[in-house]
Amino acid sequence: MKQVGRLHVLTDTALQTRFSHVDLTRLAIAGGADTIQFRQKGGATREMIQVAKEMKALCREAGANFIVNDRIDVAIASRADGVHLGQDDFPIPLARKLLGKGAIIGGSAVTLEDANKCHSEGADYVGFGPVYPTTSKDDAGPVTGLALLKEVVANIPLPIIAIGGVSTENTPEVLKAGARGIAIISAVCCQPDPEKATRDLYRALQPGI
Image (cartoon, rainbow, N blue to C red):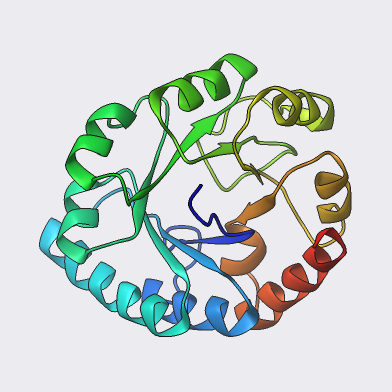
Protein backbone atom coordinates (compact mmCIF):
# COMPACT_ATOMS: atom_id res chain seq x y z
CA MET A 1 0.00 0.00 0.00
CA LYS A 2 1.25 3.48 -0.86
CA GLN A 3 2.20 5.86 1.91
CA VAL A 4 -0.83 8.09 2.41
CA GLY A 5 -0.18 11.12 4.59
CA ARG A 6 -2.06 12.01 7.77
CA LEU A 7 -2.18 15.81 7.54
CA HIS A 8 -3.52 16.95 4.17
CA VAL A 9 -3.64 20.72 3.58
CA LEU A 10 -5.71 21.84 0.60
CA THR A 11 -4.47 25.18 -0.68
CA ASP A 12 -7.14 27.74 -1.53
CA THR A 13 -7.09 31.28 -2.89
CA ALA A 14 -10.86 31.73 -3.26
CA LEU A 15 -11.70 31.79 0.45
CA GLN A 16 -8.76 34.10 1.12
CA THR A 17 -6.35 36.21 -0.95
CA ARG A 18 -3.50 37.00 1.47
CA PHE A 19 -1.51 33.91 0.61
CA SER A 20 -0.81 32.32 -2.77
CA HIS A 21 -0.90 28.56 -3.35
CA VAL A 22 2.89 28.55 -3.19
CA ASP A 23 2.90 30.59 0.04
CA LEU A 24 0.43 28.19 1.63
CA THR A 25 2.48 25.20 0.51
CA ARG A 26 5.62 26.57 2.10
CA LEU A 27 3.86 27.52 5.34
CA ALA A 28 1.93 24.27 5.66
CA ILE A 29 5.03 22.16 5.09
CA ALA A 30 6.88 24.20 7.73
CA GLY A 31 4.01 23.47 10.10
CA GLY A 32 4.20 19.71 9.56
CA ALA A 33 1.84 18.90 6.69
CA ASP A 34 2.87 15.70 4.91
CA THR A 35 0.46 16.13 1.99
CA ILE A 36 -0.36 19.25 -0.01
CA GLN A 37 -3.33 19.31 -2.36
CA PHE A 38 -3.56 21.98 -5.06
CA ARG A 39 -7.22 22.98 -5.17
CA GLN A 40 -8.23 25.54 -7.78
CA LYS A 41 -11.55 25.38 -9.60
CA GLY A 42 -10.86 27.87 -12.38
CA GLY A 43 -8.22 29.92 -14.16
CA ALA A 44 -5.82 29.52 -17.05
CA THR A 45 -4.41 26.02 -17.42
CA ARG A 46 -0.90 27.23 -18.24
CA GLU A 47 -0.81 29.29 -15.06
CA MET A 48 -2.11 26.36 -13.02
CA ILE A 49 0.64 24.13 -14.38
CA GLN A 50 3.32 26.66 -13.48
CA VAL A 51 1.97 27.07 -9.95
CA ALA A 52 1.69 23.29 -9.57
CA LYS A 53 5.31 22.84 -10.65
CA GLU A 54 6.46 25.29 -7.97
CA MET A 55 4.35 23.52 -5.35
CA LYS A 56 5.67 20.14 -6.43
CA ALA A 57 9.27 21.36 -6.08
CA LEU A 58 8.64 22.47 -2.49
CA CYS A 59 6.95 19.18 -1.65
CA ARG A 60 9.72 17.13 -3.21
CA GLU A 61 12.35 19.00 -1.23
CA ALA A 62 10.43 18.40 2.01
CA GLY A 63 9.48 14.80 1.27
CA ALA A 64 5.76 15.62 1.24
CA ASN A 65 3.16 14.24 -1.16
CA PHE A 66 1.83 16.64 -3.79
CA ILE A 67 -1.72 15.95 -4.97
CA VAL A 68 -3.76 17.84 -7.56
CA ASN A 69 -7.51 18.15 -7.11
CA ASP A 70 -9.47 16.94 -10.14
CA ARG A 71 -7.18 18.20 -12.92
CA ILE A 72 -5.45 15.18 -14.43
CA ASP A 73 -3.75 17.34 -17.07
CA VAL A 74 -2.20 19.59 -14.43
CA ALA A 75 -1.11 16.56 -12.41
CA ILE A 76 0.63 15.01 -15.41
CA ALA A 77 2.28 18.26 -16.50
CA SER A 78 3.59 19.04 -13.00
CA ARG A 79 4.60 15.44 -12.27
CA ALA A 80 2.42 15.42 -9.19
CA ASP A 81 2.43 12.40 -6.91
CA GLY A 82 -1.24 11.90 -7.63
CA VAL A 83 -4.76 13.30 -7.85
CA HIS A 84 -7.85 13.57 -5.71
CA LEU A 85 -11.16 13.01 -7.49
CA GLY A 86 -14.76 13.69 -6.52
CA GLN A 87 -17.67 11.43 -7.39
CA ASP A 88 -18.49 13.55 -10.45
CA ASP A 89 -14.90 14.22 -11.47
CA PHE A 90 -12.57 12.26 -13.75
CA PRO A 91 -13.15 8.48 -13.40
CA ILE A 92 -10.70 6.79 -11.04
CA PRO A 93 -10.00 3.78 -13.33
CA LEU A 94 -9.14 6.05 -16.25
CA ALA A 95 -6.98 8.24 -14.00
CA ARG A 96 -5.07 5.11 -13.01
CA LYS A 97 -4.45 4.24 -16.65
CA LEU A 98 -3.12 7.72 -17.34
CA LEU A 99 -1.07 8.21 -14.18
CA GLY A 100 0.19 4.67 -13.64
CA LYS A 101 0.30 2.24 -10.74
CA GLY A 102 2.68 4.40 -8.72
CA ALA A 103 0.38 7.41 -8.50
CA ILE A 104 -1.59 8.16 -5.34
CA ILE A 105 -5.27 8.47 -6.20
CA GLY A 106 -7.80 9.61 -3.65
CA GLY A 107 -11.56 9.63 -3.98
CA SER A 108 -14.22 11.69 -2.22
CA ALA A 109 -17.11 10.03 -0.40
CA VAL A 110 -20.17 11.24 1.45
CA THR A 111 -21.78 7.83 1.96
CA LEU A 112 -20.65 4.26 2.56
CA GLU A 113 -21.71 3.50 -1.01
CA ASP A 114 -19.43 6.27 -2.30
CA ALA A 115 -16.55 4.89 -0.27
CA ASN A 116 -17.19 1.37 -1.59
CA LYS A 117 -17.11 2.73 -5.12
CA CYS A 118 -13.77 4.46 -4.48
CA HIS A 119 -12.37 1.18 -3.18
CA SER A 120 -13.71 -0.96 -6.02
CA GLU A 121 -12.42 1.46 -8.65
CA GLY A 122 -8.89 1.39 -7.27
CA ALA A 123 -8.47 4.46 -5.08
CA ASP A 124 -5.58 4.48 -2.61
CA TYR A 125 -7.46 6.43 0.06
CA VAL A 126 -10.89 7.94 0.70
CA GLY A 127 -11.52 11.55 1.68
CA PHE A 128 -14.70 11.21 3.74
CA GLY A 129 -17.02 14.00 4.83
CA PRO A 130 -18.00 16.62 5.63
CA VAL A 131 -17.75 15.09 9.08
CA TYR A 132 -18.70 18.44 10.62
CA PRO A 133 -20.44 21.54 9.22
CA THR A 134 -18.22 23.46 6.80
CA THR A 135 -18.42 26.53 4.60
CA SER A 136 -15.19 25.80 2.72
CA LYS A 137 -16.77 23.69 -0.02
CA ASP A 138 -19.94 24.64 -1.87
CA ASP A 139 -20.44 21.04 -3.00
CA ALA A 140 -19.65 19.44 0.35
CA GLY A 141 -23.07 17.85 0.82
CA PRO A 142 -24.84 17.03 4.11
CA VAL A 143 -22.86 16.51 7.30
CA THR A 144 -21.96 12.83 7.72
CA GLY A 145 -21.07 12.79 11.41
CA LEU A 146 -18.81 10.53 13.44
CA ALA A 147 -21.10 7.49 13.44
CA LEU A 148 -20.97 7.16 9.67
CA LEU A 149 -17.23 7.84 9.69
CA LYS A 150 -16.81 4.87 12.07
CA GLU A 151 -18.93 2.70 9.77
CA VAL A 152 -16.83 3.62 6.74
CA VAL A 153 -13.60 2.91 8.62
CA ALA A 154 -14.96 -0.48 9.69
CA ASN A 155 -16.03 -1.50 6.19
CA ILE A 156 -13.50 0.04 3.79
CA PRO A 157 -9.94 -1.40 3.80
CA LEU A 158 -8.35 1.88 2.77
CA PRO A 159 -6.92 4.83 4.71
CA ILE A 160 -9.83 7.15 5.53
CA ILE A 161 -9.06 10.87 5.64
CA ALA A 162 -11.68 12.97 7.43
CA ILE A 163 -12.59 16.29 5.86
CA GLY A 164 -15.10 19.02 6.57
CA GLY A 165 -15.06 21.20 9.66
CA VAL A 166 -12.09 19.38 11.19
CA SER A 167 -10.21 21.43 13.79
CA THR A 168 -7.59 21.04 16.51
CA GLU A 169 -10.43 20.59 19.01
CA ASN A 170 -12.24 17.75 17.24
CA THR A 171 -9.26 15.96 15.69
CA PRO A 172 -8.95 13.58 18.68
CA GLU A 173 -12.51 12.32 18.23
CA VAL A 174 -11.95 11.91 14.50
CA LEU A 175 -8.93 9.75 15.26
CA LYS A 176 -10.91 7.82 17.87
CA ALA A 177 -13.45 7.07 15.14
CA GLY A 178 -10.64 5.37 13.22
CA ALA A 179 -9.67 7.93 10.58
CA ARG A 180 -6.06 7.72 9.45
CA GLY A 181 -5.79 11.47 9.12
CA ILE A 182 -7.43 14.78 8.34
CA ALA A 183 -7.79 17.11 5.37
CA ILE A 184 -7.94 20.84 6.03
CA ILE A 185 -8.86 23.94 4.04
CA SER A 186 -10.02 27.00 5.99
CA ALA A 187 -8.59 25.84 9.33
CA VAL A 188 -5.18 26.55 7.76
CA CYS A 189 -5.65 28.77 4.72
CA CYS A 190 -7.97 31.29 6.37
CA GLN A 191 -5.99 31.66 9.59
CA PRO A 192 -3.78 34.67 10.40
CA ASP A 193 -0.76 32.35 10.69
CA PRO A 194 -1.15 29.25 8.47
CA GLU A 195 2.14 27.77 9.67
CA LYS A 196 1.06 27.93 13.32
CA ALA A 197 -2.41 26.61 12.44
CA THR A 198 -0.82 23.64 10.67
CA ARG A 199 1.54 23.00 13.56
CA ASP A 200 -1.37 22.99 16.02
CA LEU A 201 -3.18 20.42 13.86
CA TYR A 202 0.00 18.36 13.57
CA ARG A 203 0.25 18.26 17.36
CA ALA A 204 -3.40 17.29 17.65
CA LEU A 205 -2.65 14.28 15.45
CA GLN A 206 0.21 13.02 17.58
CA PRO A 207 -1.86 10.96 20.07
CA GLY A 208 -3.01 8.85 17.13
CA ILE A 209 0.49 7.83 16.08
